[in-house]
Length: 120
Length: 142
Image (cartoon, rainbow over all chains, first blue to last red; front, side, top):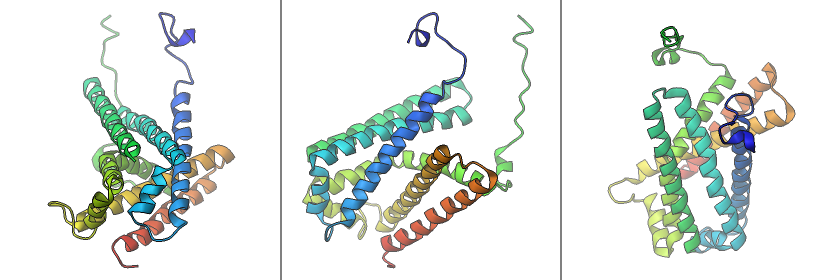
């Protein structure tokens, strides 16, 4: 890991985007899995009311999968939004501000969603 | 040092006003809409979490949640909520299907002109058709 930190850090070269590229795909696959699992549970079973809806998320394994999805979404959206800021916003100060706002936005939403989930 | 700090020429030949006049190939449409839908989902994220919150909070808040689509909530009319949810549905579907297309292209290397054109058209069409069907259900036409 020595080339990733310290005064001898490698600051140029390829593969810097690989981690982002891969994490965006892995998190996407996890969210797609969540979507499929939720859809299957919604389609199976009778009329949808509060009991059935809350019952889906009350199962421990569904809570874990939903939690993984929330974290995946935050990471996925971070990579995507950072790409957008890097492409369109050139002044460094404004870009930094927007990136900080993005992180706050995502962490805030993720925390709120986890709170909803664990209240069940 | 003076030469180092000399202004470098910048070639930016695309201006926002010109983009409107561009005619993109289907793959280009999918690409820019992938970005637009992603940004839209990001901006609407608090709304999604709010829906998650009121629908799961309690039986009473679930009633508020379903009533929001019938009578609105607070000063927000039901029609506006449905419209935003319709936007969410399209953004989710387009982003999801365009993402599957990415994964499929990565896995099978189907990146030729013809393959990418066909898969782009399928992506655009299927997300729109599904949006229309789900939108019809949402607005009570189905």
